[in-house]
Length: 467
Image (cartoon, rainbow, N blue to C red; front, side):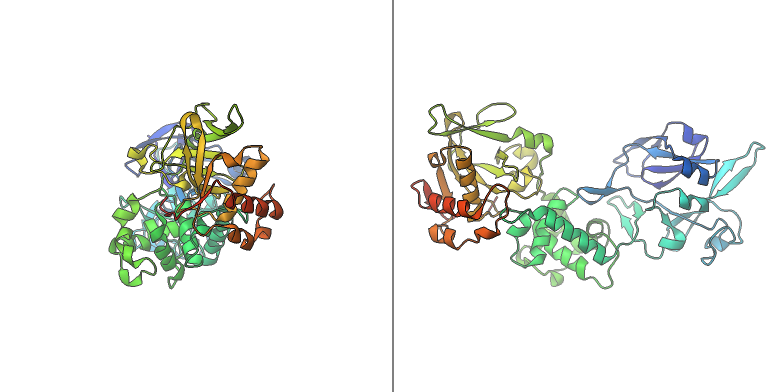
């Protein structure tokens, strides 16, 4: 029979003989069930450093563990040791290799029940069993594998919803903040675009980071309100816990805070503290489109046969966008590549609830977002900038109007419905020189802004940022 050690979710340490065949094993997470494991082929230089009696299997379809929605890893399930003969199950921390002085053991657990593997048993041809030290694997296994002598004192423990434990290398606060800073630049977009971090800067960096957390949340883009509080706590914890933010939030100390909801340490939105209980927080998520869903909603604008109006048709199906009414607007998002997407906000509402603007571009920056109105046959009748997630300004109005003119469209054929404070004076005060969008310049954008806000198709009304 074959057996092995699951040292990482996708790596099984086993004998050389067993590493040559395909096996199935029960994964620790009951939701995953049985997983197929295939031979893991090592590089020649790795084989030279490895005991020929040992080998690895690679677990196919082992679940990813995400630090952010687009940054994943595999969870580490145990520590490996450089000491094969620990004394009383503890080992001599001053020794680098096999001189602990005790009997050969396979595994030990410390007083916190952290498992450490020291040796692996292999059967000899004479019928005896020998313990092969694992210290030589330090030059073979991936760098994120944990070693008792190096990592045990600092490695945080992660506990999932079923009580299963895993460990990870400790991180520094400085390194994590640099990651968030890099993500912030990525999700803000160029000056002149609209983004969810820029739309939520009322409490300076904390609110912007809370909005960013919704976009990069690996557990399904939970609503941003609570992230501000928890990010603040994680950021200012003394001492810093050494965990990635989302690990801390869902598998560490932050998880307990979400259960107790200590209002005394809530920094923002105290009126909505109850929404931050785990049961509510984990349930209220924003569905983000995948590539397939997004492509289905891309729209192409073309002049009508007489050239007087604009007609919108879905690019993939060539079907006209359905007619809608003032109290049942479609939402739209216009991306940085000048692609227009139109979605009925009740699309698949049974499964996802009302679709939000951030869903369409998966939280990425855009040129504009709001609501759009169509008559029969996909005839475009009106557009506004009502988006609570993106909160476009008058720059978005001018950019969209300028684009339509550049395309040769009759931009006056539809109603442009701006906010009550948007007018020609607002156009003159806007900092057009700070707009850095390819294909647009400050002079033409100012001209377009003045043209659209003084034209007969311009309507001003108060809008609620509720989408």
